[in-house]
Image (tube, rainbow, N blue to C red):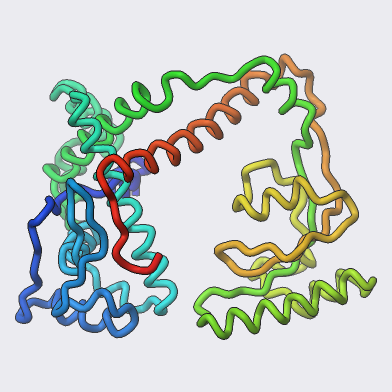
Length: 337
C-alpha cells in the first residue's frame, strides 16, 4: 500500500460524539455481539451498561460511542480485536481514547481561534495523493477495499491541516534553539552501546508483575555481585531480539529507544549496571558498554542538531498544551488509566 494512503488511514480520529449525545448499540447488531465478547476482557466496554469513559465541556465518550468510533475507523472489523489479550486490549483502548481526546481538544480550541483551511488547499493534497496512487479512480477503489470513503478521507485531511496550522501558530511559533543549546548538545554523547536483560510484563496480572519485579531484583543482585553478565543475559533475558547478539544493542542514537531506556543508556556511567528500569515492555537492566561523541565538525551537524532539539521542544510543548486544554475544557477520565 502506498505510504500516503497508509498515513491517511491512521490520521487523527474524527470527533463524532458531541456533549450529551449518547450512542447506543442495538442488541440485534453484529457490533453488539462483538462488544459483549470484548467486555469479558475489559468490563467497561459492556454495551448494556454503556459506561461514560471520558467527558469534557465539548464531548462525552461512552462505551457505545467509543465502540462505534473504533468500528468505523477499523473499517467495520472491530472483531479483529478479539484476538488481543485483556492487557493488550486495554493498552489499545488507552491509545485510542488518548488520540480521540487530543484530537477533540485541539479541534475545539482551533475552532474558537478561527483556524480554517480552504477547499483549494484540501484539493491540492488530494491531487497529490491521486498522482501517487495511479489516479483518482484507483485511489477510490483502494479506499473502498479498505472500507473507507473519499468523504471521510477529505474530512481527515481538513482536520489534519487545521490541527497543523493551529499548532504552528499557537503552540510552536515561539520555540527556538539557542547557540548555547546547540553547543551543549554537540558535546553530549551521540550514541550508546548497552547489553540488556528484559523480563516481559506484557499480558501479566498485577500479581504476576510483582513476582516478575522480585525476580528482576534477584538478577540485579547477582549482576552487581559480579556474576558473568553475558551468562545472566543468556539465562534470563526474554528479549525477542536476543538471538546471537547476547543482548547487545550497539551505537544507537539519542531518542531511538523508549524514554526510560534511553535515559538510562545515556546517564549510567560506562561499565556500570543500571537500576531496574520499567518500560511498556517490562523490566530492564542495562550494562552500559560504551558511548561515543559526535566526530563530525560542529558546522557540519549544526542543522541536524537544531532539528532534533526543536522536535524535542515541540513534543514537550504539545504535551504541556494538551494539559492546559484539559483544564480549560474540564476534561475528566472516568475509568482507571
